[in-house]
Image: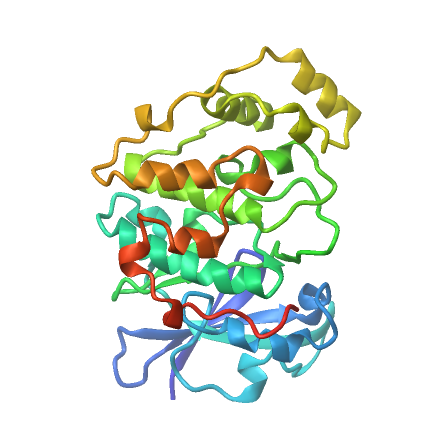
Length: 300
């Protein structure tokens, strides 16, 4: 019988299971979810979320019963129906390994996961190094979908950790797309190369200024998407900033790194690359395998 330890952290309590055969080895994590947390998806979302327990997205490599990998309710809790979701216990996260030399492999795994998530119609909205888990074999999984939304739902403005927050979130667009995750991934990619945050804003206003100092002021057709009058006044009060070459900031031994970052860190979200396009880029093409980059059968 495996030992069980209860932990509290993030948005949900979770159990950690310890191997009965190797007392030092934690083998799994079971997160307690209220059905309220997944009610923003369709009523059929429980079974549909089962494919998310695959490589690079949460996931478990050991066999579990239906109630644990398809969000099947097990009873009632304070906030409604309660579900358990069992996943592997990953050893660490990308935040602790930002100076690693395995940038190419880890970034490929990240985009493989994002390709699937976005094909399912889901926007993560809070990608950051601490939400990217890594085990002893350097296998990577995206976690913490507590702020995730379907792509056609209304989006709130205050999401995503500041350093990785896309401009359209700060500019309070009423709706935005999966391209906010591409921006966050680009910030993470840059940080893995230069070993420090690319846009270390002190607050949300400074964050916007730091971005525009490097990437230039947004064009008028992008500003037209802003819904807040206060935000518009703030934008127009700032001096126009020219775009600076990323290559002066991102010093990489791989000549294809900066061109990929240029495609990911575009202020105009419609011109940012997709996860699939990133996998096909010159930087990641040596690791690209269309047969091993699955997409969802249908959107949630």
